[in-house]
Length: 458
Image (cartoon, rainbow, N blue to C red):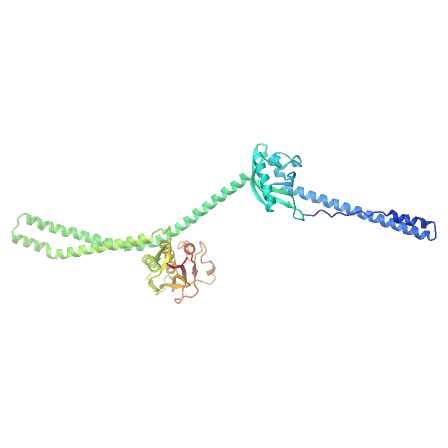
């Protein structure tokens, strides 16, 4: 913004000097004196002309400055009011005229409180006093008196200071509260939609993981249930034979007939088979119960407070279920500590381990003699779980974006690209970090994450 020109003083004619020269005009050397006088007059005239030119330039600068300020006040969309220290209106923007229905000339020189309703005027005076004391902007809600009723604003009251840091007035800027509330409502709706989208992505990833396990779960449940079903048929057949024999006994059949019937029904052999069928049905039912218990632990939501749990056991359950749902014969081996007590939500950590193991299986594909190693260890005072494989590993150009949402190196339809992103978020919520580790003795990819040890100081 151009600054107003500095004050300048006009050259002054010196009568005393001319008076001193006049007596010498009639004497000797009068011509030389007249030359001096004329030269002085010429210099004075030149100075006057130069001063007039500077005044004209300064007037042009002032006009430009005024035009510049007026264009700013006319183009500002927010309400802008400039007031003196005494609270008189010095200028307003065009938006204020639109809100109040009065032109800027009408408000010029009037009290600032006349523009606002009584309640807002008193509140505005207190805000101006606070801004003056703090030497900083203060926000307040106030309502302008408009043609159709009050026009509420959220105003920022800032003190105007001179070069000596003295308050010479105030600048009030604000925007109608209706626009602000609408913007806040839109922001809130967008935030709610974002949260819903994130929750939906997490659910989709869990469903994708669950879908990969369905084949293994169906196979695991089908075997013991089929065993129980077959033994139930055998028990039904044995029961029919025993009912036939007991009916003959109740009918009073002779001893020889009962012996022949027992021989034909092969009751001695069926008694042994009956005990075997009962044991088999019980073993199958216990196997089903164990599978259901594993599923219950696997599908636990894990919300609420974090608890102490065995990271090795939790990883074992998660890896076992991924292995059951896989069609490849990949060996999963555990090394390091046999047990590692950490703090966290077991259900969420199971999801992380399942994603890492599933990614390792997908990466190895049809590799011969594929292996996955899960190592539990303590590093830096925290529990750490490392999952490595014998696959092709992660390329250097892919490593920086491996944890980005929707990034995947799998074929279309074989991955959502959210597994590592969600896993990293889960570990971060537990206060740890999921990392791609450079070292891997197996030669493939190696991922590790850390959790707080149980009993360690927070």
